Amino acid sequence: MSSLLKVSNLSVSFGKGDAEVKAVQNVSLDMERGETIALVGESGSGKSVTALSVMQLLPYPVAWHPQGSIEFDGEELMQAGEKQMRKIRGNRISMIFQEPLNSLNPLHNIEKQINEVLHLHKNMTPSQARARVEELLDLVGMPEAKSRLHSFPHEFSGGQQQRIMIAMALANEPELLIADEPTTALDVTIQAQVLKLLKELTRKLDMGLLMITHDLGIVQRMADKVYVMNEGRVVEHNETKALFANPSHDYTQHLLSAEPKGRPDPVKPMAPEVMKADDVRVWFPIKRGVIKHTVGHIKAVDGISMTLVEGQTMGVVGESGSGKSTLGRALLRLESSKGEIDFMGHQVQKYGSKAMRPLRREMQIVFQDPFGSMSPRMSIFQVIEEGLLVHKLGESYEDRRKLVAEVLEEVELDPSTMDRYPHEFSGGQRQRICIARALVLRPRLIVLDEPTSALDMSVQAQIVELLRALQVSHKLSYIFISHDLKVVRALAHDIIVIRQGEVVEAGSADTIFDNPQEAYTQALMKAAFEIEADESGVVAN
Image (cartoon, rainbow, N blue to C red):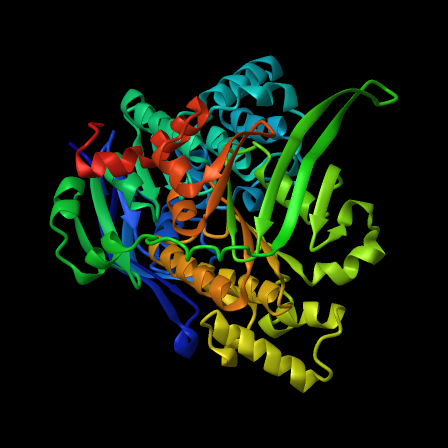
């Protein structure tokens, strides 16, 4: 049987001469139709560069190939011209990119963006394209999006944006699908649906699936073969069962043993209250007609109450679009809301922006996308210094340099790197920088919005350890928003489970994980730990 994809001795370099960076070196892999191959490894190992080479999407001529061959269905792609690649991309080979908001066009609604692929390659009429778009949104678990076809990417949650990207990639039923961290931003139940969908499509269409992921549970569940990459090279490859049963390379063993472990230190008895929220509501009006009158509301947060004390982590879990991030922003007064919010004895709902400013130092947020939340034109020192300048901390430039150096050491980064720019750091390092930006103001409360979702498993474990250590040393309170329940279990003392803007279950982390009462919570737990059970042999796949 001839290979669908055959990569032979592929090397990729960026720059030339003394500035040359060898990103990929002598990588070979072989895929047949209907086969799923996983490329695994930590950030910077060369996984995505290898995949982008197949699509011929690297920034040539900055990136170049010292050697190698890429054959797709017997056709050499390394020398293929742009006209030839346009016939292949999006039609015979599709790609799901890792960061959906950066990949979707902010100026076009979702229908137009999915339509574009159908118009270019299938010449569908508008009515045919509309029907296909709706079918695709059903396939990826977004039936509610049919009423929102004219909405723009920023109006959807991170998980919904990722599903839109998957719908675009599947539109023309490609022969080869390259999925670069396809489930990173998805909650556990949708993740299970998407993985099941990809598996079914692989069988139904006899499609090859090249999956790039840091989630080894997904690899074990999905892949037929695994290629482990480190520093641009394939250090080990084997059939999935054989590799997981008997990894031979030290690096593979390191990857398999890395995951968030342990529990947070207990909250001290009689710890002072930091925040209390009562009946918090965030409703977005739905407007129709020429004069845009309100015909209803999207109840993103609908009557949520919670109490947070010093040194406590409140985990907020639920599916994508359930209102988790909206709640976090509302509690920090970054989103207009109704209800009562008491922060350190201040009824902040009554405060205007001027009155809120002194309290902003005490309440900080770490966003999901560290790269997107930093200005690419500012050095790391300037990124962290900005808060010091706003709150008039550090009398001189030298004082502020000292404060930035101290906080970088606290998050285990080299202070000598403070004059570098965000693009010069890995994903895990950028997340540490964002934690440092929040920490430098010595807050009492930090809202952590999916801070580990895009990180490698080993880096996730490091960030969890860091957050636990910082919580103890600074008596911090966290509101930890995440769909990764393994990370939540390692960090949270208490949990609230949200569905469609309402709390369906709340309690201690041990109670919620070990004995969930509500069917919805039970479904979340089952989806999150199904792979873990598969690995131990308790549940058959």
